[in-house]
Amino acid sequence: MTTRRVQASAPGKVILLGEHAVVYGRPAIAVPLSGLHATVMVMPGAAGTGVVVEARDVGRTLRANQDTSDPLVVTVQNTLARLGVTDPGDLYLTIASDIPVASGLGSGAAVAVATIRALNAWLDGHLTDADVSALAYETEVLHHGTPSGIDNSVVTYEQPIVFTKARGVEPFVLGAPLTLVVGDTGIASPTRETVGDVRRAWQADPARYEALFDAVAETVRAGRAAIERGDAPALGAAMRRDHVLLQEMGVSGPELDALVAAAERAGALGAKLAGGGRGGNMIALVTPANALGVAAALRQAGATRALISQIV
Image (cartoon, rainbow, N blue to C red; front, side, top):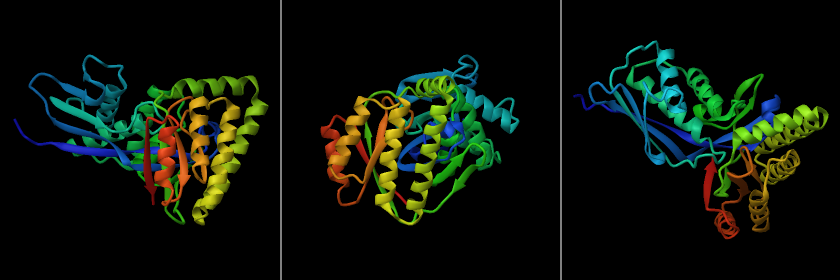
């Protein structure tokens, strides 16, 4: 048996501004979190086993010919179909990730992108970034129902982006590096549920929610301008406003609000929930000088962990 192995990784991500409203055509800003990764390794499998996927972090072993509805298996199947491969032989894929699951940090998208890229490399394919992102979006649909497309985009392209459903990905340049502290509530974020709840609320009161989405879009525009000119205080103000709007949409929660308040008391320039809400993570914009203090304040306020990340 050959000892050949192929490995690919993909980062986590965080939405700085615009979650939920992005589903309804408004812009959102997202950045990769280079300190968190999902890694997939492909190697030859035992004879006659077909394609086997081992997700070590969640203690699951899947067989492509049996677990046909599992998102991990569907990702493999879709990638093989896109590559025109009907019989890849016996393959063994291992998945390892330090990105918290169901926390708004793009775990599902990162695993999908790493899986697609690892298979593409193993099979000497020629998938473009656009191909990878489109395939990962198909997996996101399984996870979230009606995803915006932002997770698969920022994870695939691994750079700060503005995303809209109509225009897709627009990379942009930071005027100065950003320092973020990501605080984890330790509570799973039910993204499919919150996205569905917002949709039902929008259907029941479209005028109110369209106005909220428009207000979010204004925070995104203000935030992007602040980022491009290196104005961290103005970005912090946009983040604070965005959190208030997300509260009005009903997607925050007491744990997230407590961490946001703790970060701001500790000197954060701005803070907000990140992702689907009602659990998962919040983010705080800080200076390099007060990052450790804000992280400590978040842990004291109940965060299960606080990750400091530089965005450049």
